Amino acid sequence: MRYLPWFVGFLTLLPGCRQSATDVHEAQQRLTAVPRWYLEEIAMDEVPVLQKGKHLPHISGVRFDVYLDWVQFGPDGSFEGHFKGAESTQRFQWEAYPVQNVIALRDSVTKTGGWNIYPRNVYEDVFEMETRSTLYDPPRVTKVALKYRRQAP
Image (cartoon, rainbow, N blue to C red):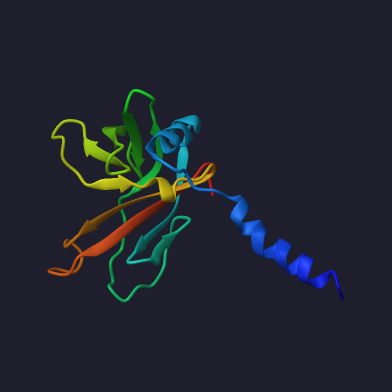
């Protein structure tokens, strides 16, 4: 019985061992260290709408039929992704913004786009990129997050 507090304390601290990146430099190192990241989940306003390639019912009725099923980061700032069902890949550019503590993805041709990766969402085996848009539920702003894992799900 006297070991119970120690055991409960150990179980409480155990999840804390998995640490997110502390800044954009550490996030960059983690993202580029993995040869390829695979899509695990798409969420709208924190609610999963697609998991492991399967659509989940959602009140919005939104379905993602086209999405990046895998991505990879190059140390030169290149970002390559494969859209589900496509024969070729698309190239984008990522850039680190240390002052804002964010890595942003932009279209390499138009230099536009708004996908952000925050260090707090980058772990050794998983990362999340997000954007905010009025496209899905105008005029309300919707957060869309893509969660990628280091191995194929």
